[in-house]
Image (cartoon, rainbow, N blue to C red; front, top):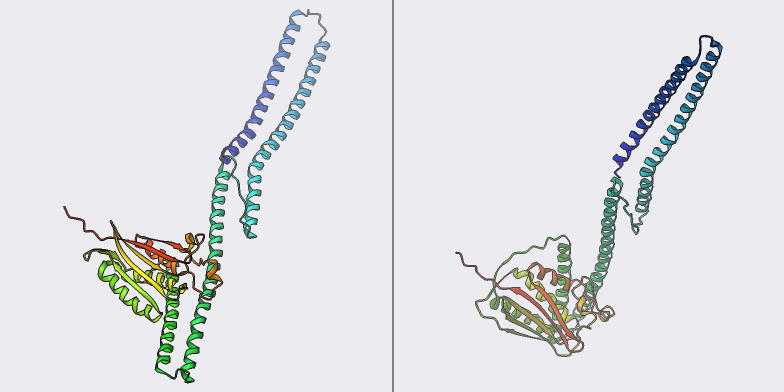
Amino acid sequence: MKLKTRIIVGFSMIIMVPLLLFSATLYGFAHTQAKQVSKQAESGQVSSENTVYDISIAESANSQARINLMTKDLLLTAFVILIFTALAIGLWIYRSIAAPLVKLKKATQNIKEGNLDFVLEAEGTDEFAELFQDFEEMRKRLKESTEEKILMDKENKELISNISHDLKTPITAVKGYVEGIMDGVADTPEKMDRYVKTIYNKTNEMDHLINELTFYSKIDTNRIPYTFSKLNVDDYFSDCAEELSLEMETRGIELLYANYVEKDVLVIADGEQIRRVIHNIISNAVKYMDKRKGVIQIRVKDVGDFIQVEIEDNGKGIAAKDLPNIFDRFYRTDVSRNSSKGGSGIGLSIVRKIMEDHGGKVWATSREGIGTIMYFVLRKYQEVPIR
């Protein structure tokens, strides 16, 4: 029953009960007087002229006393009934209001103390039940928001720790090689060339880490700057492969490129962000390369309405238990956590985010000790004829 209905019923009973009692009292008086008049009339008919008038007076006085006594009893009874009715109605309304308020007070106290692991159950269909449902929904959302904030704080701390570790490693290497050059350790052109190439590679690593950190902040605020345009698949991926081959050569890794797509095939994509996807995947492959002769292959294939890019390496591979989680933010395999390779843990999550925003997808297959193949697809550009 709705609270409004309960209050209306309660006040109606408080008003109606006195009226009913008053009506019953009046009816009792009228009925008693009518019986008295009837008795007196009967007495008058059977009595003779010699009736003693003091007997009639005595009977009349006795009847009046009975009426007075009955009136007092009725008033006392009405008073008692009114008290019990008021108490019962008051208790009924109080319990319908006070009990839910006690529950709400306890719930708000839990939230005040930071405890969100409780359930506020709604009973009935009145206004308090609706309020309980809204309050419970608020508690759930507040709990989700708190859990998200805790997770975000944890991830941010982990990111800072990872980036700090990963920046410290190349900075230490650059410092060591620069000191070697200054001290004359690189006393031959070959050594000097090797030192300079190493410094260049380490500074590229630092630049890549800083770019990842900047891009990560844009992902969290959904402010990734996309500039979509029509890209020729053959031209675009050939340029990417040529650019990467120079970098891989300095690292002693062989880069192989094969394009199986016709020359006029186009895709709609952001060229800069797709380069980031390829660079992140290859950087991850280089980071965990454990073979003396590293090989990375890039293959571009036509798969119907999509073009599929495959990037294969002959590195250490990924365990089957870790493979489903490698695109999660900050996820690292157990081996890489204990290695000196470092890594911010956001490179592949950035890859997935970019591909999702392009309407494509990314996945991987791997065999431990043999290598890993990363796949991603982009939808072809197709002109719709105008009718």
